[in-house]
Image (tube, rainbow over all chains, first blue to last red; front, side):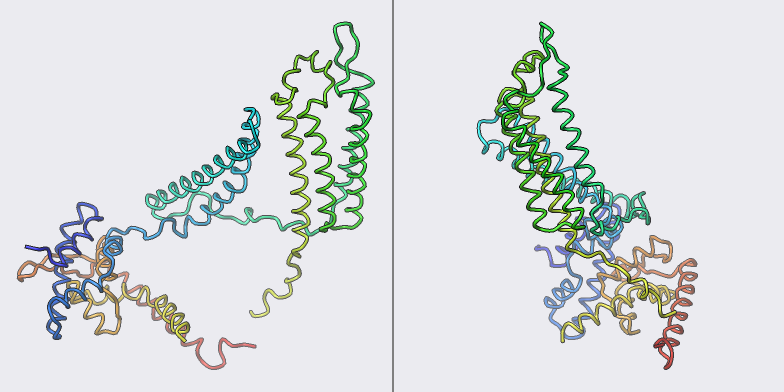
Length: 333
Length: 117
């Protein structure tokens, strides 16, 4: 005996129902389908067609079973969705970049043979992270959705969670001041390490931190860049707002300073060799050494952050902040 | 034009969503089984589908608003549902609310109301 369409349909519905509901729903649904078929046959339809139409009307068996079992037909419902999206933004906006930076540093420290090796390793890790962060977070939320029956998480939304409006564009005095203070501190440090060395060799002679050769070219160049940075910060402050030319100048200055420092660190021209030898860090600051890589990485990171920061400030200024809608709130009472 | 009817049917569906529950609680003060109830609802002008009604009956039973008995006297065994005491109380509340809403909406519809300019 071949199974009828009804048998196959009911089996498909039951398959995803809890055990204790099955027999009861089987009996009732079988009766309901038979009633509907009878009604159609009485109205003049052919028996086969009547069965088929009845089944079509009941629709996808999975959907019907979900109705019986009170099971959601969505992965993450409206009660959890805002928390889900907020968490995803944190994971992809903060955790992922931090992890990528960390992995990049790790790969650089392992003394890679080529830039391609670095890019390959970092890209592979980043891809893996993107997939894992998304998958496991979604899985956990889907499980909560099914076990917690759609109740919102403990963190009910409240007005304190509102983000601040983006800065309205006025450049604060803090930026040129910070720039000036930075320039001052750097000048003092550079002079101090040369005039009052705090590390001495075995004969008691002071050893400067910076390689003496730097004084002939690179220290003056870096000093000029620092002065330009200060002048730049003052110019932005006087203009009152960031603009594309400012962002470009900012990027050029950051690239120049960062590039010189990265080059000095990676070619071991930054530290006085006698100083490094006295502290026994000669091999660490040598090209490919741990400290050389870390210092170069930090210098590059600061430069990249500076460029991104300038670009972000410029970009934000292009979108005027909504203002003075206050008069339109409630005219109808 | 299909867009307009799409919007219309969406809003109609939204408006009618809760009425099937109320209609079932009212109709099942006289016990009945799934398919017959479907036909009575259709005859009363409250159209719904079996795939909505059958799971709904189970849910209302689980909530204690309906009670059920298997009738095996006929050749075809049927599960008869009837409105429980709690179900009748809820039906009265829902009907009261529905009437209040109807009055309020008709009040808004009266000329001179609701379009202050």
